[in-house]
Image (tube, rainbow, N blue to C red):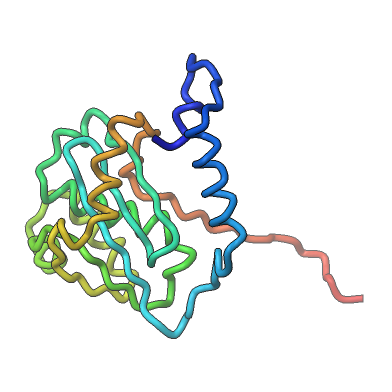
Length: 185
């Protein structure tokens, strides 16, 4: 059992031998190279997504993972909507890394790739599809047993009680500098 249970509220801090072994293992892994490598911008990014009943999970590449808990309304979404929400969540979360790059999305829900061409979807789905059209996206079907990290993330968040996911798209803000004074000397 990893020592992260010590971080829970109202858990007495008892650093056992098991915690000591886990701590030494973590320390050993942290000093091994390479820990973090910059992305190769010439290669496409891979995003693996999955949605469970109560959470969505996403993994970009092999190094960075994110997950969020669904809110009360999102729990009632159809499976296809949850899967697309996982993709949208991933693109919003990893936007700064994947903008201007080809992105391969692995999902265990084959219907996602057909949603991108659907013309008579719910307004929420249309909004998400429009956001995804900003990117060079390829959707690849990958069964849950092959997509284990994202599958795991989508199942563990409910028990963790992570922060709820925001399914509304970010408002992009345009700033303008309006100054009639010349900046030239």
